[in-house]
Image (tube, rainbow, N blue to C red; front, side):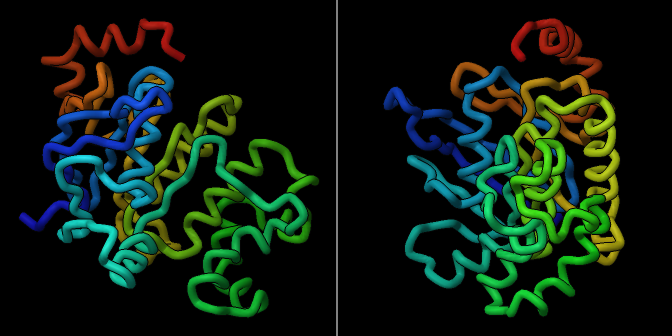
Length: 255
């Protein structure tokens, strides 16, 4: 078997606002092409996990490997290349530039990393805008679009560099059922192999406060509780030997 794309060994993750470690003693791996759904109550450390995997924060203890390589702050250009292979969608979509157009926001990573003029970057992002259903908004500023469209704009920007791994923090949180259906369908296409990426299946790690929308779609599942991450296995494992925990996760008012 190939080396995991993501591997944490006895890792502790960045301190929480209270000064405590967000998560401790994590040993976990993600294989190429898997779709992991990580659930747990709000503020339990899921965002810290994704931001660490996205190389925004170093592990406080233990080791993080990405694409088979141990990650350290001294890697320089190699670390920058690794970051480009990972797309991180922040909860709520992250920071978009209000006075820039949708096209300018989505094209920004290409312009920054590849030193492109806007016109050249626009040719590359146009298929992404179309796939995300926001091509008609390309010339509008962020002030002219709604929350649901902003979430898709942030997704399109994250996809602009054609990452191998997508990390998604509560992507459908607070959206109406029609928008949730769109996200589930689009992410399913990415996971299966979207034409945008030459039918290459994408590796997904999705964190969510609410497991219910993602239970039929995820391939592997994990839960964050009591400052640690526990891998639960496949949907069959979750519905079989973890049935009691699944019932609790679906019944608890944690959202």
